[in-house]
Image (cartoon, rainbow, N blue to C red):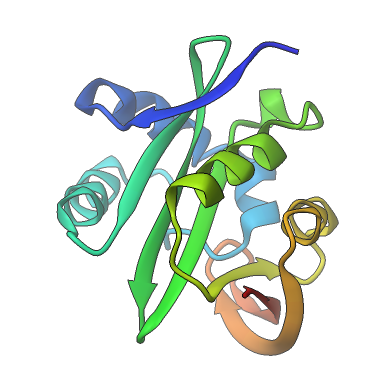
Length: 157
């Protein structure tokens, strides 16, 4: 496998990240996405806010030097959380697991939380492999599915 690395997100990455985040199968799996994944203006506005947040660390994920996703840590409702998105073309290659391991080397704060749709077995495997433990579930509205679904909450101490 090519080397997985993290680097700061650049403005030139935004078009590619937007395309990744509007792939229908990826959107379904992630479930908790933008209301309209095809709204580039809303995406750009959200990314400006995310990238300007001093409480967040945002990274591009590369595979062999090629952009394949993003990963971040941030604070929400007083909790430190992580999130990631990997292009569907890179699924099944260990990219998410390696990117998460690299992020956890950079982010020393604990506990960290993560969330995933309860039926997203691949993402739950990545998080459990990294040491996250399931601490609960809740029902929440998933814009990608236009209904409430169960979300698994995980924590890394």
